[in-house]
Length: 483
Image 1 (cartoon, rainbow, N blue to C red):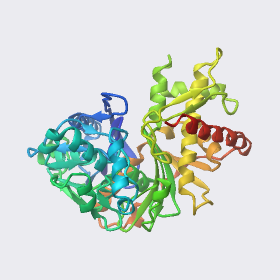
Image 2: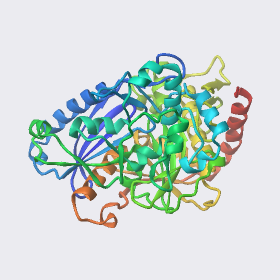
Image 3: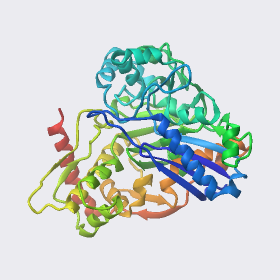
Image 4: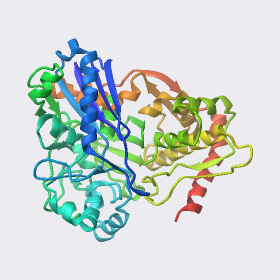
């Protein structure tokens, strides 16, 4: 038995799995995002831990007998956050999240002054990365910045609370713009460029390594074995890849959560800085991945839901599906939080055009679902320079629950989209797999296998043809509204 913890932007999910990756029990708790002004996105790290405790208590009560057989815990979490910690290991203010755009000026300056650093960091500096946000903090909140001793990432704050260990893994470090991807260690030049020389950065481990022991108080509270190891774990994207076996250049997937990513594995570090592709360390030693990072995913539909009288996302999408007869007459942009790949535009926002007196909720819903698929097509296009024969991608995350969305993505991208029975739990399962590697002598070939495909959505060629023109109009709309 293994436990995987995934600290997502909108919720924390904890799964208990057996050695066949079957989810025996799980718990989930919502996480509230604070938006103090347009373009800013923050969360209180203390609320993360409160949600973790509550979720673990539930898991323990539902699976008391199985908890005694757990051999390891793995951690996953959203990437790029900036959490300042003081000398008493307490957070100084809120964590600044991946979809926060306040450091636009700082990112621009870093790219202008230090263009050579992008090759080592795996991508140009962007506002959502940790490094530019630290530079912003040093200039705009200097007193708070001077108080800070450590910089933490999301999942590693939970590690500190659970084990007392100050550490991270190569994949979370990779997303900071403070890391040398090829050498897999901190970059002194990047750290200095971001005015962060005085900060103590966590020790960096490969993801399958043991990285702390669960405190006795929690072992007792949750009826877990004493001395239980906690693996280094990985960022949510890398953990998702581990769950579906996408750890080489022949495998790829789409992660559809609050934000979205299109990811292809690689055995070489080959940065594609010009394409705004993120080339980061992967969760297995001597592996990397290339990622098109999109700031907007299922969060778009969460917002659309607030405009309607529908009860939940499922009913919202179901209503649009019932009315669906092909591409809708509205055209939308999904950039509620700006966009990274392929635009690196923190100021662009969402839009919808073509409204008329007969426009209904279903039409607006479809327009934004289509916009999500269009942005995925843009992201995939940045990755396929040398891999044009890609036939299929696995869809994971909350968005994988919707067959309608999966089929829509297949039709727009003109490839087969596969989903797995446990796709929605993929990052948590990946974290549990890393715990298994840390706790046993099994090889990665034994553990990192492909999850069985439960459904395949093949592209409808005729519908794809109709979407090709609309995709071009989507791109033109962005070009006209940019700036």
